[in-house]
Image 1 (cartoon, rainbow, N blue to C red):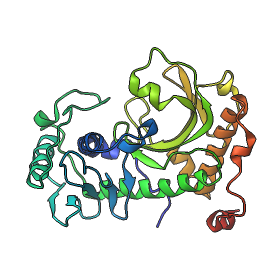
Image 2 (image 1 turned 135 degrees about the vertical axis):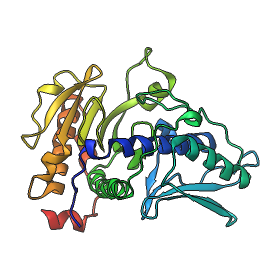
Image 3 (image 1 turned 90 degrees about the vertical axis):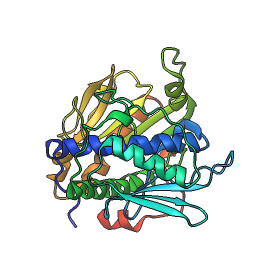
Length: 311
């Protein structure tokens, strides 16, 4: 199978907007039914062999333990209880409003009473999910390709994560921003952020360098790999990146290291190219922020045969 197949944003923008809202609805159910972890790691999706999963949740206040899975091969949503009961419905032909209605009917039938803020977060419109009949595009072939790219990027980020010895997040898919990321921590607290909302303050309460991939949006209308350092040290945007196509781009008063997906695809070894890019961005941020170089060392005595074969 081709590593990193083509995925121009304009080819699936309608489908992406629909699926993003589906993901936000399920993600908000996850937020309501899961125990909070540091930096909000509890809310993100993880990859499966057929799509993405909420992971098991519930089990408190008489709520059944259940899991919600997007099957992007069969194009179904599957809601499963721990006791074996389950329900499923098709993702094809659903508007955001009908998806929301059907999911909450299923949850009620399975004995789960859940309340969410039924509005999109950080998207271009604020139409409540219950009223959104305009987002209804769903191209099964493109949705499957989205999941396959996610799966490939997931493995690349897992390889990148393996080279770090300090505190590090899981590789996870965020439903609010629709990106997949892994975050490294220096082990030191970050400075106070009095202007930030409580969620952001906790998420960035420690020094981090985050690496990931997103599918594009209105501001950057192309898929890309990225990295950022927070808090951003002075001079970061002047640091060199690899390969030569990579660049520092301004973003919300700071800078993102960005390698466009199509530039990575054009290299003979796109996986090695992405790993080199993420490494160069990490090294720039860690050096200027004075991170401990020992954090770069993987657990002693452990080697990755996949990485060794690529060297």
